[in-house]
Image 1 (cartoon, one colour):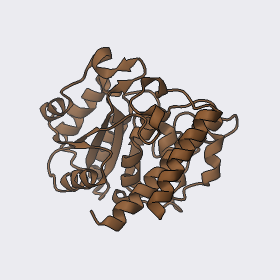
Image 2 (image 1 turned 120 degrees about the vertical axis):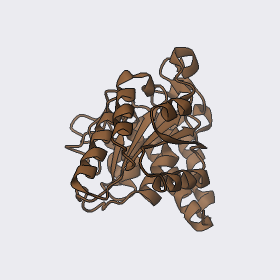
Image 3 (image 1 turned 60 degrees about the vertical axis):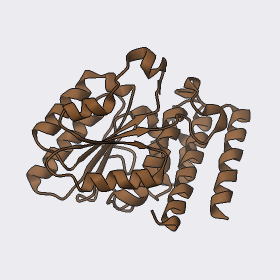
Length: 280
């Protein structure tokens, strides 16, 4: 990847992480861990991959994104805000009474959200339907959906995989954030879905396994998606939950709680220092 483009994406990902911390701190609730692990793919999708118009969120020829792991809305909201879908300062209204930025994405209130999600496992079904609809209408539209490795314990996920394969939905990209942790502990201890890549292949997908926190590997993965014909595409991203905030990294406790004032300051200081380094 071009070094200037990579730095641009690293800056954007760091901004997304700052938004995640500041919004969950202001809400005194939310899910920072899985939002942080996915910050780099949010940055790549909205900074390099997807076709959209921030000033025209309902543009009919846009690519679609479905956040199947809807509890990681702080990451999506931050990505959208820093691309101009709505004001960045509104991130601090997360989960507040009367705010349009609630704990899970709402397509009726949040500019840039293509599907309301939150009930785990259902987002990939919707994404598959969107991809099929685009095919039926002859539209050049790609559909992307992001799942968690804990989420894929849901049976409906695999029904959707069969559907996508049956109808050869090569405009569908299913991304799995494999950070190894879910709300109750390590995925391996709660209900292991491994080997995830082999399962996807068995369900008819073309699959790559990458470091999902590396922009060079993300670029190669999405290039492979565009070069795949006749079958849906799966990206299994190995990531670090809580990445970017030292005390949150690989710590299951940060799946679903907000930082207090002192913790927020530490996180903001770390991320601000990273941003300053990148922008130097």
